[in-house]
Length: 197
Image (cartoon, rainbow, N blue to C red; front, side, top):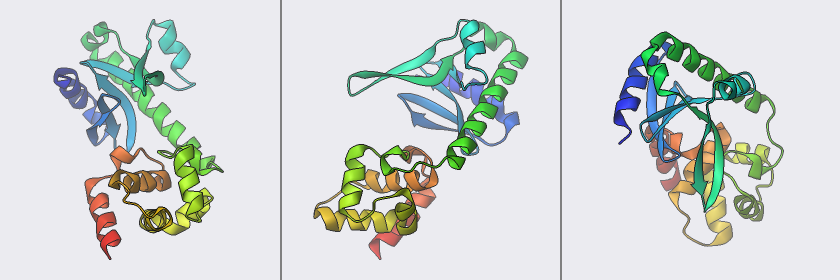
């Protein structure tokens, strides 16, 4: 289980703010507020890399975490830290702070350069884009105006089929710029209440 590294990391990084963990990529994502900056898989801590720190991490011999999606390898931006870093808490905190800064910067850049196509939004693929277009929602702006619940209702009526609630969370995540799995339970409840009206 991933617990020892996860607990140690959460305790160590508490000074950054409100640290939470959620299931991600077959392990646990570590979030400060709403920003994921670390990942624990198989009891190994991985830190977020970006253009500012990726070369530095590679120079130190760190490698990115790779997982399989539909049988294909997906290389993440999370680099496994060496075991020795656990012995030097200050180094680990500094590197984690860099990872958090990178994640925050990447997130704000993503917000500034908003995608022009639906499939480029978080959680949405080409198939979802086609479904949304058939339901009359053809741009990220139109999706934003509709909101997750109305877009979901439009999909159900256009495709005359039962759709999974994961799609509702995916639409909400696409609108708010996050992975569907991190849509908070309270927000999910609100969406369900609106859906039943």
